[in-house]
Amino acid sequence: MISEKEKKLKLMETSQPLVTALVLAGARAGRDAVAEGAGVPIKILASVGGMPMVTRVLDTLEASKFVEQRVLCGPPWGILQEQDFLNDLVEEKKVRWVPPQQGPSLSVKCFLEQSPQDLPLLVTTADHALLSVEMVDGFLREANRAQVDVAVALVPYSVVAQAYPQSKRTVIRFQGGGFCGCNLFLLCTPKAEKLVEFWTEVERERKRPFRLIRRLGWFMLIRYLLGRLTLSHALRELSQRMDISIKEIILPFPEAAIDVDTLEDLALVEQIVGQRG
Image (tube, rainbow, N blue to C red; front, side):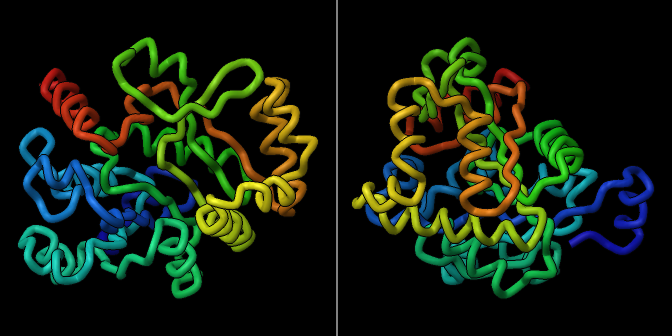
């Protein structure tokens, strides 16, 4: 957590509100090939450029001019106590720690219920090893200008594919092109809790997709399957159905879409960091 002096200096640099950053750092259920391959108890401790991924994320957030405090959701307390660098950050109150729940959406939901005063809330993940200050500040700056309940960072798939054709990313395809998520969300107002509730429902009903289809509407699904649904129309429909305002923030950084889900991802981010020097 930054000092009052540092907070005042940040406020002097910008007129936009400072945010709390929630870093999701829970353990994946079941076998985790990345953790096993890296020889660590949990994926976020895998080394990239000579330091654990989670450290890279926390350092980036500390350097952001718009982040007031950092909250680490996970790893489980037993693992955290075994890691001196994380334990020291928590004990020295430089980072708050909260226990992870079963899944990212439940973790965010639980945090908002217990700490509603921490809005606006930036949500990211501890495996976002390539996260940079430029990405964070650019996203927060544009999200503040949008004046919405929720902002979501995306990168055009064409940008990612051109820079890193070997990287296998999940692509959401819309009319006019596909997009990749960036694990960057800004929950701006209390109404954002509605989207978190929907996120929880998506995770809970992932094996029963027809329930979600009924929630979103068949017409929108058909348009999506036919390739006639644009990103802006999809978000507008979702906003209307949930009575919240959602805005996409398109980032130009291909690295913003690369997190570490596989050993191949780990090798790629290590290569990118090495090339940066």
